[in-house]
Image (cartoon, rainbow, N blue to C red; front, side, top):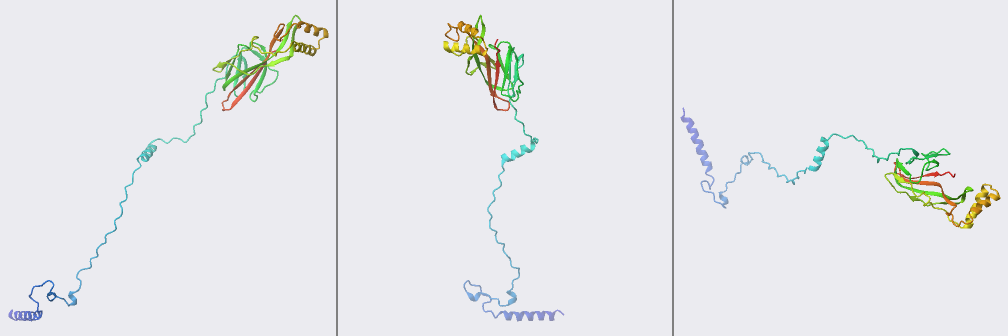
Length: 289
């Protein structure tokens, strides 16, 4: 039973062998450069690709390296401290005004201006009119009792830079006839700064030896006596007695002539609590006796 199959297989192999013998180069080695040894396939079925095309991935252009971000250490630390610190309230702190000096206290004349308070202790005064010291830059009084020369001016409620003084004098005649004030022989001194410290200034220069006075000739003195006598409506006889009492006088400071203090003025310069400069004046009249 197996012999017919074997016979058919042998016949097929024989036919195949015959067909392959048509290639003259069969069995010869391939020689490089010899085109006759190159096997050329003409059957289209063997010329087809048996694998899918491989598409090579193109290399992407190299991107420049991005530098790593540099941390701002100082800013980071400040932010951390701000976050850790308790939140402060947004309030504006009012400016602290410099401490003001206390108003002087004591018995005497107290003048309370808006920017400064002045005290002249141990004197009694009076005023003949109403004075609004919160609006006024000056005040006037008349001395009733107490001493002025050698006394003090004490200031407070303001920063005082300087206290100055000036005064007015007149010349009078004092003898057995009485006292005759020669109003036409008056003079006013210049402003002079008083010495002091810690808002305490000493009043000085108001004694008889230091008072300034108006100097004039003997004729000027006689003329002043005549005017004073007529202003008081003296008789001619009384006027002549006064003139006779000074017939040997050559100077206004020669006896029986005397220099009399008529009034004293003080000027207080400084800076108030509001930072503005101020200048206040006080006048003290001395009554003629």
